[in-house]
Image (cartoon, rainbow over all chains, first blue to last red; front, side, top):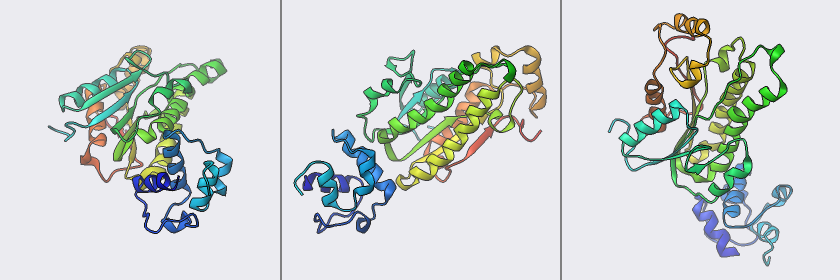
Length: 71
Length: 224
């Protein structure tokens, strides 16, 4: 799951050095519109993120949990 | 190659005369054109969100997107039914929103989106409440998308033609058509190709610093 998220961030032009579950999206420069872009990319990969969960996603670990991965 | 569009890929939504003129111009540039409409091989009904599904997997493959789908039902407001109103709004405005929403992921960074608006979006016109409102909405949609998508270098603009020599124009009563012709400075209708030229410019890298704009291609109608 971490590798997939790392790839996703790279595809969207964000830095991925030293990425951990605690890394915040804010620290990577991902703002609310950027998070929407990541969500849309995930949808194209077959994942679904309920809109109401978006505001809960602050860190990489949060996204892993929402996607049902092992955080 | 006038517009530097060789080998680039464009989606054109709508099968009207202006869409066809743009497609022809793009193909002359050796660009690839994907026509999307209810009449095209690539079926798309812009009023039906389900019909966008086959295109949801497209990813970063379009250098440009043109939305030309539009209808008009011309009646004074007192005679305009809710059904008439919704038909025009659904095609001209809601269809544009759905197209933007569902083709966003198909757009490459630095690509260009153009919506076909109309001078009546700013000017208003007797008998065209729904059409005018839909085009005014389209202009607001254009500005909003320009702001949201600039982060990816995607430019979003609108073109507002005056009266163009198309099938839609033939439905107008002759006095109305003549009124439009006399009101513009050049005293004639535009040819679809003249609108296509402006659209190709906006789709091309030649307009690389233009976004969020609504450009009038109206023979001077608006300032007359």
